[in-house]
Structure formats: structure tokens, C-alpha cells
Length: 109
Image (cartoon, rainbow, N blue to C red; front, side, top):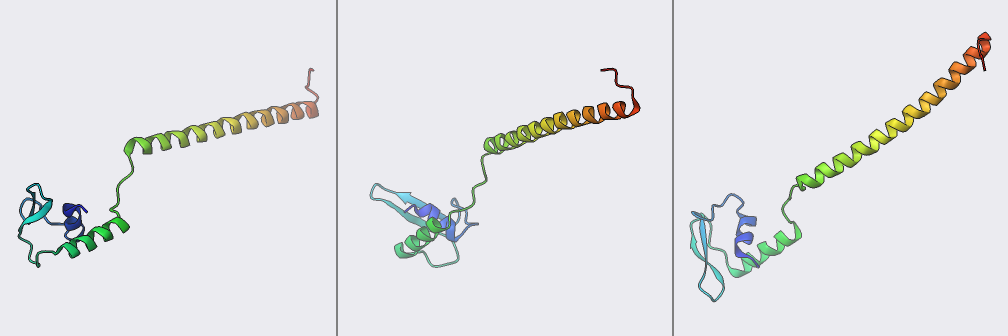
């Protein structure tokens, strides 16, 4: 259990330099100062908060580089689809043009 994380889970706005101070003298961490208007938490309280935190981890925004890579991949796929569509439409248009010319009798082939 990480005492700091457990306290910040319960008291999200608590300032670790003013509201509480955690200390470790070599025998493990403990709350050296408690200036929050609530009873100082017991080890059981801290453990319960820690377990809640493990079940409900705080939201972490996605990595910006990963988001950019996904966006680039989507744009490449969209561009390829547009190029294929453009090629298909160009072929269809050429076929229609030849058909029109043949109906007019202007086909020289």
C-alpha cells in the first residue's frame, strides 16, 4: 500500500505539503502530520482506500504520440480509399464517354 496514494484517493484536493505529511524513518511510512478537518486515518482506513483505488484507478489520458499515430493511420486509410474511388470513377467516366461517342458515331477506334 502507498499511503500517499490512498490519502489522495480519499482527499483529492489535499495538499501533501500542508494538509498531511508522510514520513519514513526506516521502519515504514506513516502520517507524521495531519491537518485535514477529519480524524487521522487508521491503517485499516488507509488499506480500504488503497483497495478502492486499485479497483477504480484514476483516469489517465492517452499518450499524445499514440493518438497522433492512430489519427495518421486513419488518414492514410481514408486517402487510400479516396484514391481507389477516384480510380474507379475515372474508369467509369471513360467508359461512359466512349459509349456516348459511339452513340454519336464519333468513335475513331
